[in-house]
Image 1 (cartoon, one colour):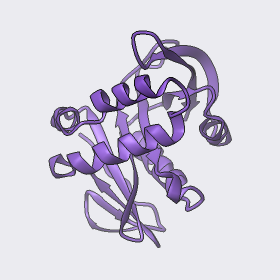
Image 2: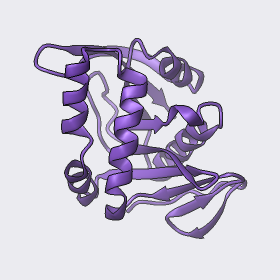
Image 3: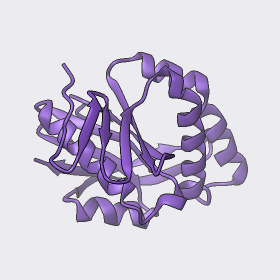
Length: 192
C-alpha cells in the first residue's frame, strides 16, 4: 500500500495533495496526461536537446512524451507520478517505481527515480529540491532502503544536484535515444 508523507512545513487538503508555502505537489492521474506530455517534451528538450541530432531528439520526444504513453503509464499502479505546482503553475513532475532494483543494485527494497523533471523557468525556485525530498520521504515511508537513478553525464546540473543530496555514482548506462545514438548516463545510488 502506498503511503503519503506530510512534513511539518506542509499542510494537506487531501491524501494526494501536499501544500507548502508556494508549491503544491499533487498525485497525477489520467486527467493529467496532456500536461505530463507537455512538461516531458519541454524539459527533455531543455536538458537534453543538444545531446543528439535535432532529428533524433524530435523523434524520441514524439514517441516518448505522448498522451497515450502517459495514459498507459498511469494505468499501471507501480508507476507513481506527482506534479509540482509553483504559484498555481505546473513546474514539473516526478515518476518513481517502488521495489525496483536495477543493474549494479543488489538492494531489493529500493525505489527507482525514473524522472524528476522541472521546467527551466522554475530553476532556482526550490521546486526540484522539494519534489525530490517528497519522493525520498514517500520511498522511506513505503519501507524502501534507498533510491537509484540514471543521469546523463553531460547534465552537470542534475549530476551535481544528486551528489549534493547524497547519491554516489555506481555505474554507467547508455540510454538509447535512437537507433544511431545513445547518451552516456551515470547510474547513481542513494542509500537511506
